[in-house]
Amino acid sequence: MSKREKTTAEIEHEFDSAEVPSANIKAMRPFSELLEKKRMGRPPKDSPKVLVTSRYDADIIERFRAKGDGWQTRMNDALRTYLMEHEL
Image (cartoon, rainbow, N blue to C red; front, side, top):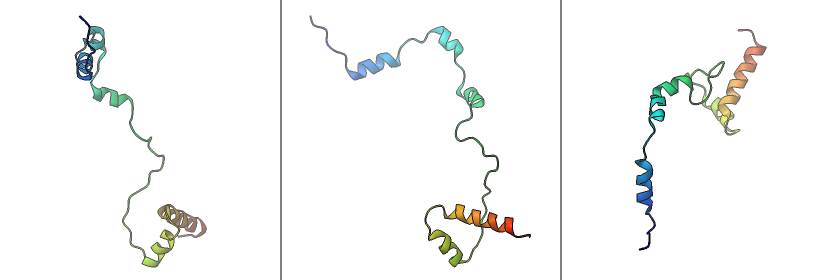
């Protein structure tokens, strides 16, 4: 009698129903505990940006947008330069 090959479903079932040693079970911790130890995502910035809603003249926005992506960063840089050069 020849031995048939196992189907993918049978192999997956064997893997899914494998015995977990008791030492491994004792070492398991809730996922929430893992999150407390390691922060996910980007690290926090030293000086994060602040979301504001402002209104500018259309021609000002058009001029900044005309140079393409990054127009908001360029506008921020222009405001920063103005503040450095002028006393308020």
